[in-house]
Amino acid sequence: MCEPLPKERTIELRKKHIGPSCKVFFAKDPIKIVRAKGQYMFDERGEKYLDCINNVAHVGHSHPEVTKAAVKQMELLNTNSRFLHDNLVQYAERLTSTLPEKLSVCYFVNSGSEANDLALRLARQCTGHEDVITLDSAYHGHVTSLIDISPYKFLQLGKEAKKDYVHVAPSPDIYRGKYREDHPDPGAAYAKEVYDIIREVQQKNRKIAAFIAESMQSCGGQIIPPPGYFQKVAEYVHEAGGVFIADEVQVGFGRVGSHFWSFQLQGEDFVPDIVTMGKPIGNGHPMSCVVTTKEIAEAFGASGLEYFNTFGGNPVSCAIGMAVMDIIEKEGLRGNAVRVGHYLVELLNELKEKHELIGDIRGAGLFVGVDLVKDRQLRTPATAEAQHIIYKLKERRILLSADGPHRNVLKFKPPMCFTKEDAKTVVDAIDEFLTVLEAAAGNKSKMVTQGSKGIKRKENGESCSDISVEGEKTWSDQPKENVNNRQGSACRQGRGFSSEKHSTKRIRT
Image (cartoon, rainbow, N blue to C red; front, side, top):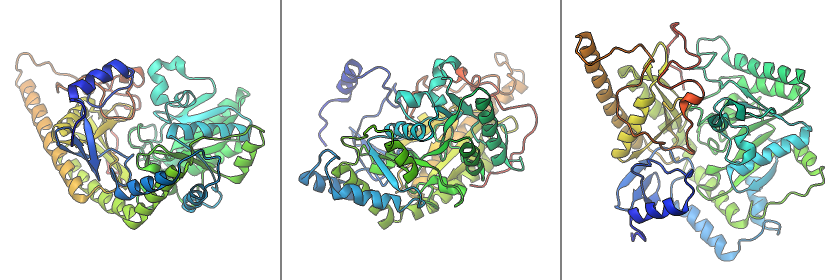
């Protein structure tokens, strides 16, 4: 394939014309991708990379059926969505058929951020309230209204950046959070934290418009909410006159395999009031959607303010959306997510038995996190080790990311065509790198025990490993904050840790 510009010229022009806050992956040695197919991406030299994190290319990069649908419709018409067109209504009918019956009204927009911003407008118009409860480490988008409710972002500016109408509940993390896997009912306990926030808000004569949460937290570290959590939160929020917004932008469209939507993992007795979706909906094409109830939609319309979106739900976007839905069904991608995801977790749990650096494996379908720790009892985040592995994998032509509050959780969110062979390839490489890391740590420990000069013993959690990693941002959806801003340095014992011994039993996923 002909490369229009040499890589060096591409970098030069990017530095000149693209805003400096727009980061690239692996900034000291960025990858220039010129084409992609399935679960693979190719650079300008033809080198093939296994993509383990691109949840945007949901059914696979450059899927021919998606391309065919887009070209066919583009040759006929693409125009303002205020004209009548069958694609819009047919896709809305198709999409809502996958959701609980009461979620029947669609608003099509162009990005996940736009969807979440509109969801906030719907909630505030419907309830007449302003305040929003969000989760610690949450990320919901890049527009101003969403930065304000995303601790993952606004805490980079300091605690004073939090708005008065924003209230942060603990992430329902049963591995390193306040209530852990040995708690008799962590779902109820974490929900009680939301209840307490609501009562505190009401005592200040404020009112809750919405509770918003990713159905599974991604940037927060691949967190799977414990059973019953969403049900109890919804009960408390509804009692307070608010609505529940489920953000499925990163985790919807069958990624969990067993269900089409991640919020359905909580059970049939839980139905959110608003669902937002993006990324996988168009397999890389810029489209997104907000789905809500008839009652909320009517309340939104009652304001008298007309709502329209010029290209949200345009004929081409809807044609692509229907192609994605067809492919998920015809290629059995939900079943593949179950089979490959289960196999991946099995392999990772085998590694956990072998490597002390692995503290927890958690996930559902093709959404899996590997929590790396320096000490399994203290659960001290192994941040430097996680970053080291990410860069070593890149050298092996495997693209993976690390995220979470301490940037120590390896994140798997590959295209849904990911195979067992792909899973084995990645896990074997991680096994190799962990073996080297632990051997190096063992040699260092032996030197300390022998009293070698120049080696100073450190207490658990006091200092980072001596691993050399590039001091830069890695593969993620947005620049990461300095971990010192929030929960203390990732090299120190973080919030929620104690000297007590905690259960380290394996979490079933």
